[in-house]
Length: 133
Image 1 (tube, rainbow, N blue to C red):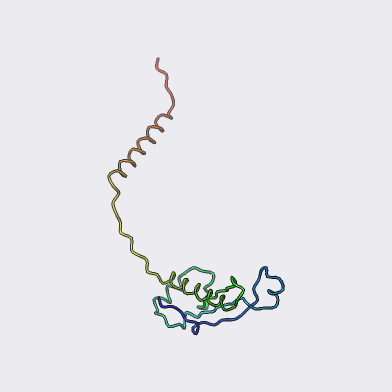
Image 2: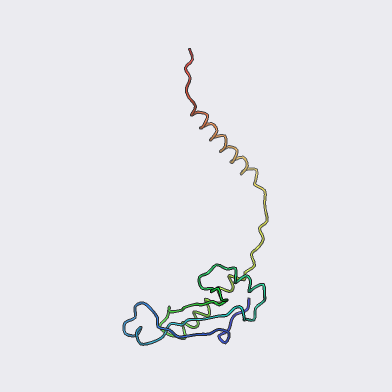
């Protein structure tokens, strides 16, 4: 999938939560990124893959919302949000390799049957003990 550019997303500056002293109350360094993937220049198949992905950051209206507040600089938080968006889209649109079924090896079959014999022997020993006259 191609990289999403800054021009294709909407940024809004918000106040960060958590520790930071007086700075956290005065400066809006956290960034909220909104990406409308329903209107983005991506293929229909990619759009469907993103829609099927189960992630709290994907809204039912077809938007991806990411809040970045890791850094004290708004510019670094913007870049962090973009990187996280691109990572999320790469994960959502990655093509899964098809699994090729293989047969169990001879050793694996023998180990399985040996285990079954051990369990059978253990269970047969649990029966009631009869006395012979």
